[in-house]
Length: 55
Image (tube, rainbow, N blue to C red):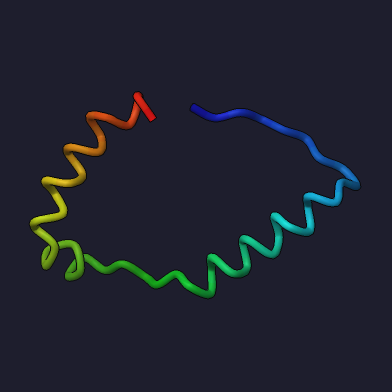
């Protein structure tokens, strides 16, 4: 589900860079303890993994 794209000197690169910076600022490290505390998320992960090829 991936594609390879080569962009050189494209104005979209600035938008991609900004998007990466904003995403990193909003992100946080997920620890093992976080995963253990989210048992209900395992059900959602299983459901989403099942339907992901349809998306």
